[in-house]
Image (cartoon, rainbow, N blue to C red; front, top):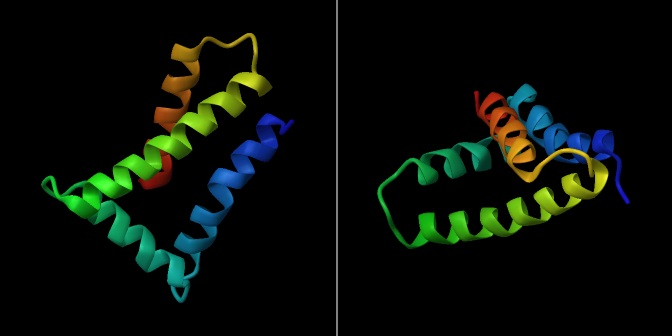
Length: 88
């Protein structure tokens, strides 16, 4: 089972790396995702949202295992805060 630190690193490191390296091809991908998710409804947006929902469910499951004394609502709040910071 992954620790909270390992989960956080797995989530944040690729994003931080992409955003800190102007030549990173992942940087463009993040911009595309961000623009698509803020666009009106459409097939690509729906596909990305569905994919992210599956990843999000797995993340909540892993965090719940790593932090068994923290409620699902609190984990959701914490993740929403982190996601907002990372999207900054």
